[in-house]
Length: 159
Image (tube, rainbow, N blue to C red; front, top):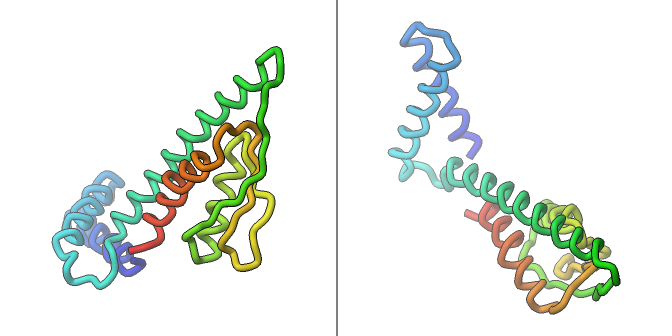
């Protein structure tokens, strides 16, 4: 993947020097042309295109922003009720993630989302113990995390 990024920058610089226009807009045009050339030559690379991984990172960031806004709204609705009608709970979630940075990212995303926090990771790094401030169904909460954050992290990290 790093080779593809360097190749794309190299193509952009070559384009900029061949056109003898050193403006940043000309570099951007060269970068886009480099992306197109790398996409055309995708069968020559053994790894996944960096463009698809970059797109997966963008989707993960957008997913986190969406979940952050929704969780803030849900916590706000719990707080403004005249009678606190919460169902706090601890629950365990099995994860398919294997690498340390994947598990750390998942834990951070869960903790940064208001109303939830990862309190412990099992010794084998396969189970996350999570506390939620207001939860109705544990299975739906686990499915929600697995189908959103964990799936997006797998898309970023696996080829």
